[in-house]
Image 1: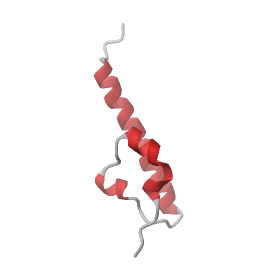
Image 2: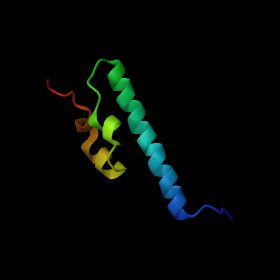
Image 3: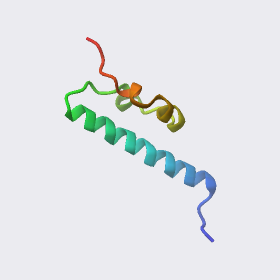
Length: 62
């Protein structure tokens, strides 16, 4: 049997999803888009992030 608990699997999965969003954020930055607030404050939980989609990464207005 796998010794990992469901809780630790969820934790690992959340970190993995955050990594994906952060990588996407960095990719957008390289296209000269303003950094998303998620990179500074930590990305929201995955369900919110997936539901909001690209709205998380709109450029900031000056």
